[in-house]
Image 1 (cartoon, rainbow, N blue to C red):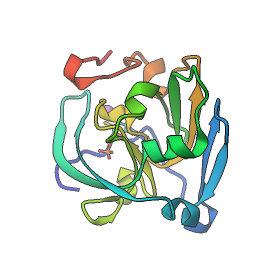
Image 2 (spheres, rainbow, N blue to C red):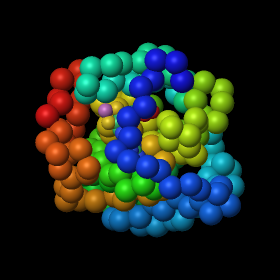
Image 3 (cartoon, rainbow, N blue to C red):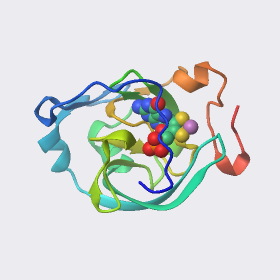
Image 4 (cartoon, rainbow, N blue to C red):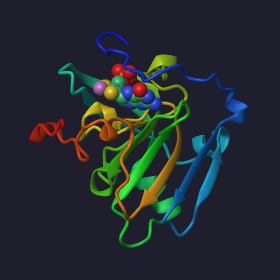
Length: 173
Ligand SMILES: Nc1nc2c(c(=O)[nH]1)N[C@H]1C(S)=C(S)[C@@H](COP(=O)(O)O)O[C@H]1N2
Ligand SMILES: [Mo]
């Protein structure tokens, strides 16, 4: 993708789509595990997003397609009191997303970018995109969403990044 800088904490294990599973669990009424086909059968949507990295690059006008976070919320029904969503990448990346930002109408579990399947280095086959937060909250290679009441930090949050990360408030670290 032109303009998007690849930012990865380490090598990403290969994956066959037939082996793909998305786990949605934690403090929810209905934990679910979806195969790739099951995920694609959920209602699909399109979101225009800008990504802002804390290292000060931004890319505007990315067109992501996938399943809205709100659809996932309707599916798993988080319990009252849930305040965080931990997103897991298959290489071991984690990040904690405040539930209020996760639940915004433009948060999407994206599998296409600008009309093409997600490029491998940008999260194939699936990434979380939280346009309202800095890009480190947009976990690539997404395999699990865990809803929690208590705060648990993710990879960069452990290393001093902000728990919320709202670029309009410049919440970097
Ligand atoms: N799984 C995973 N997701 C990740 C990262 C990562 O290392 N692993 N890096 C984060 C950071 S710091 C940024 S800035 C963006 C970069 O997204 P891009 O590589 O698609 O440009 O991905 C975020 N999501
Ligand atoms: Mo980043």
